Length: 326
Image 1 (cartoon, rainbow, N blue to C red):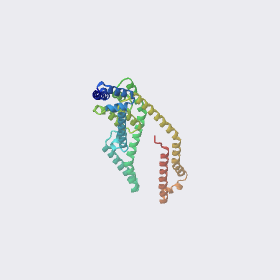
Image 2 (image 1 turned 45 degrees about the vertical axis):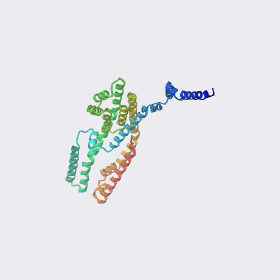
Image 3 (image 1 turned 135 degrees about the horizontal axis):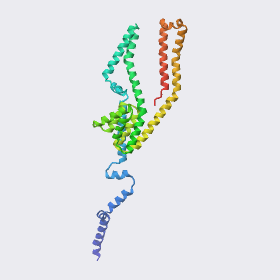
Image 4 (image 1 turned 180 degrees about the vertical axis):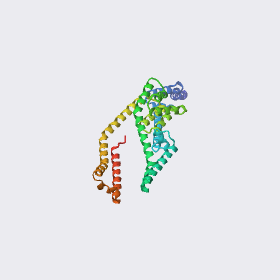
C-alpha cells in the first residue's frame, strides 16, 4: 500500500496542474474573462489599441491638423501674390502684359506732359515714375479693397443659403451651385469659379481652398477650413456653417463699430492735414507777394519741399495710428 501513495500523489499533482493551466484554455474560461474585462473597460482607446484599429478621435485630430497646416501654408504664400493674381483679386480680366503696357504708357504720357510744361528734368522723371509705377498699383490695391468689401457684405448671406440647403437635405455641391446662380457679385462669380473648378474633377475642398487665393480674407479662410475639415473627417456641416455665419456677421458688426468710433480721429487728421494748405491759399488770396517767395526764391522752394515732406510724414503717421487692422 505504501508503494501506491507515490503514483497516486503524482497523478493528483499532474491533474491539479492540468486543471490550473490547461483546463481554462480548453473550456474558454480565459477568453470569457478577457471579454468581460474588455467590456468593463470604458476607454475606447484601450479596446481599439488591443485590436490594432486606430482611434477615430485621434484620426480626426490628425486630419484636422493636416488641413490646418495646408491652409496655413497657402495663407503664407498668398501674402505676396504675383502680379497676375493681384489683377484677378481686383476683379479685372487683364493679362499681366496688358497691365504692364498700360503702366508704361501712363509713365511716358506723364513724362511728356512734364517736359511740355518745362519742369526740371528730375521732377519730370519723378512724375513719370509715379504715374507709371505707383499709380497703377495704387489703383489695383484700391479696386481689390473695394471688391473685398462688396464680397464681405454678401458672403454671410451666401453661407446662410448653404446652411438652409444642407439642413433641407441638399448636398454641399448643390448648395454652392445655388449660391453661384442667385447671389450678387462678386460672391456669385467666385462661387461659380468653385463650381467650374469642381466640374474639372478637382475635389470640393481644394476648389474652395482656391477661394482664399482669389479673395484673401479671414472670412474666406474660415469657410475654407470648415469645408476642408468636413470633407476629410466629417461632422455636422449645417451646425458648423451656422456658427460660421454668426461669426461673420459679428465680425462685420464689430468692424463697422470700430470704423464709427475711429471717424472722430479721422476727421481730426483730415483737418490737421488740410489746415496748412488752406492757410497758404488764404494768404495767397489776401497778399500774393508775401507768400510768393516760397516758390520764387531758392530758399523758399527748399523750405516748401521740406514742409511738404514733413507734412506727408505726419499724415502717414496719423493714418497708421487711426487705421485698425481688423
